[in-house]
Image (cartoon, rainbow over all chains, first blue to last red; front, side):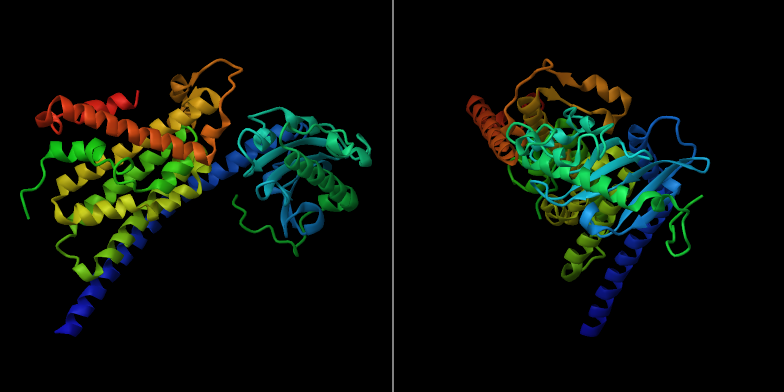
Length: 215
Length: 234
């Protein structure tokens, strides 16, 4: 009798598990395309704000490679998106991580034009203090826009810092750590692009599979 | 068991008398963490309401099938499935809102309010009452989340329903209220301590209203609980 009741309980529990999983699986199947599309559109809108309008004719989101440069880009591996016009390179978009934000890592999106100047920098996600460090968001202040057009020679390398450290870039009242680490990360990303040169524009090699592509 | 609660009793209990956020103080993690704006509070509240209605309904439907020994794992399975559904649907149709609320949507799974209603109410009552209870409790929580969000937003940056279009589409912009362009707010309101202070004030206000009502007419105290509930959100 006891065995039977245990079996029955197990059966009921199993039934619930199976129906729960099926329900989730069916919904997932139904909305999966839409979610992928949302992510694609959101990323595309972000890229458009930091890439020069009309200069590229490819879709950078479908032309990307994975690179590993922990020292300069702050994370084990990161994507590099390539914007081209025909065969000519136009710009690169990198997704470095600022490892030393005031309250944890800050994710950036940086575009570097082929002449080495910055097309723009945006903060993708952060945990900085609201009202102080969060002025790095474009929605909260214009600070992040000051990077547009800068390069490793403008300002010169030793001026790539916040004003308190003798550099060129503003800090915020009450928050120096956040701007300092972002300026540093942007500089490092520029150094990385400079080091790699045109290698980053090479066509995708079979060794670097661009999987998860959907046409 | 005594007679099942009346519909009015269920609604009044969920929205006001036994408001899970203000009286039972359940689900405080999302309440304190996501209410940095009225829009976020409303989004979180509606997502929670959807889960609680679905889970209450399901739990009530199967209440005779499920043996007491396995009821908790069954509740957890049911709730987890619905939370995943809500998460997927939000990603598909309210992607921007999903990006803002992010992790807290998944964390609805561990919101004690939901398993609490499943255990205390839905597993003992008919489906119609269970659904109504889910709706009332969910909306009660939504009201508190939205009010607290509006309050914190107002004090910190002088807006109400900022970015409401993320949740409600273009006409959400109509809701946005802005007090001048150079509003200098109190930053503390949007930081974690502001959430605790705001919640404390709201609980105090509810107790104050309850006491007033009680003093005026003890017999009518439970008869019209909905009126002050809507009044407090203004």
